[in-house]
Amino acid sequence: MRSKYLVKELLAEITEILKPHIPRASREAQLFLMAHLNADELWLMTHRFSEVEDAQKLFEWVKRRAKNEPFEYITNRVSFYSEEFFIKEGALIPRPETELLIDEVIKNFPDKQSAITFVEVGVGSGIISIILARHFLNARFIAVDISQAALDIAEVNIEKFGLSDRIELRLGSLLEPINEKIDYLVSNPPYIEDGVALESNLDYEPQNALFGGKVGDEIIKKLLDEVLKQKITFFTCEMGYDQQDKIQAYLKNKKIKSLEFYKDYSSFDRGFTLKVHN
Image 1 (cartoon, rainbow, N blue to C red):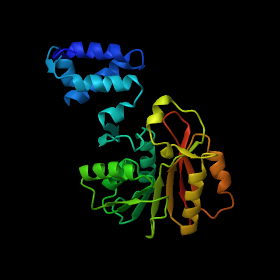
Image 2 (spheres, rainbow, N blue to C red):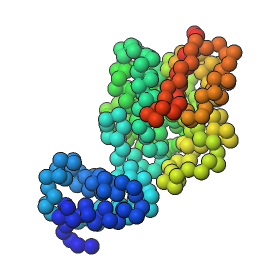
Image 3 (tube, rainbow, N blue to C red):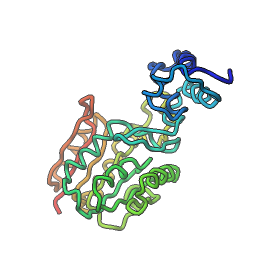
């Protein structure tokens, strides 16, 4: 490894390392270099002949990526809802489709000034509660996760956005740590059927945040039971693309106000909002 590289030389070399392993090698090479230099794309384009010293960390990142480790875990950065969050192994990497869950909540509860209580089950990196807290300025948030590692990551992000006084983190399963009255429940729970073969890069992500049980929808149904039992007015939840019929059948003959499903960017069923009579 040389002590100095030009930007264009680094881009070419790390692209060649990634090519046999990554479909978008050239683009990821740019993203890695931007993250390493803490620079944006415009800087990269206008400084192709600038010198870069000490590229050892960059090459270590690229070697890890060549083994299919997720880009986000390597750089400890993930973009979501036009913001940048801290991420590392221990919390699920946010997907763009989860932005639609937030859009659904905002659509279903237009009163942004209301002092309601939101509860999020499966807080992960904290991205959902954080974005919602920035929209609902007077709301209180309680965020639960079964993983202390995930809660630690969420805490970093909550502190970054200055929301420690409005988002309370609790360790526990589902709604067990909650005694308060819940106005709005939100969740992106694990919903993949146990044993389903996934892409190899998902091996790095917490398996308890992916697999939801023998059928896949067990955790969703447990949350539905709690929503009906506690008469929680709103429940917005992400789900698997093939689970709409099962959820509709499960709620058949139950006392509900409405059940609306929404689709993701590929027009697959991706989630729902349940409204319950008080």
